[in-house]
Length: 302
Image (cartoon, rainbow, N blue to C red; front, side):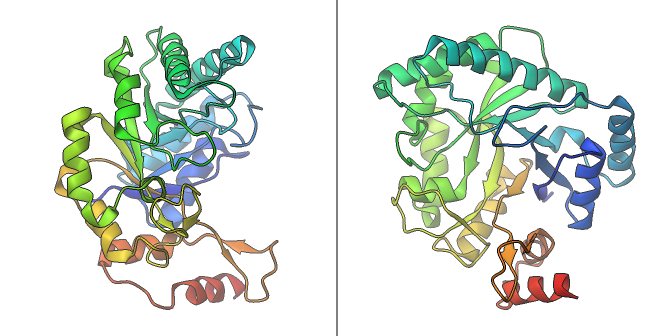
């Protein structure tokens, strides 16, 4: 079964609004932040809205077990700073509680950056933070995301992720989120995705893959830049992305689009339109829409 969705909002109507947006794209899963991804401000979870969201998911065959949360970018588990480590532990633990309250059992976390420490020190810091975050009975799994290698990002190789996972005490609650753009920009050839999966399985185990972010890339392989592109328009290409999406080894794993919104004809940066309905349709039909961007603009302009 194809489990496909996109990043959606989580605003005044919280999870209910997230479900409604996902359904408007004809998705059967989705990913959300429980607040803005750029900060750690969080409002209380509204249990009534959560109940309505769960009822709507049930009516539309969305399995809550395939829904994914994402932690904000500014949390840095790799830091050497004790105060920032404590902040990361406390904030991520609270995010896990919020996920459990919503009924969501997976959260994607960026491994962080080695700002003023060696990569080996940063790995040890990630291990320390994650072990402390998972030192509880909250039924939520952390999925460490594969990163592009921009700046001093950690988690750019399978071996780095393995080093972290091997040292996590609660191994049942640790996994990986693959990101196709990040893999490409880190130096992995998506046209040889089966070879990548073979290496991943040998080092970590495919059973640890809990989510896949499906993004094309604006950059050439090994650029270490992390700039997402719409499906089929970037350097990875439509058919290579389809080979990831429909790979039988990842059949029951949610695939999430994080592709960029599309700008209007007049390039007014204040008018950006979500591409997800069109991209999900292309993925389902396996037919690339050569007029993708213009079709999106025309729909929302009308």
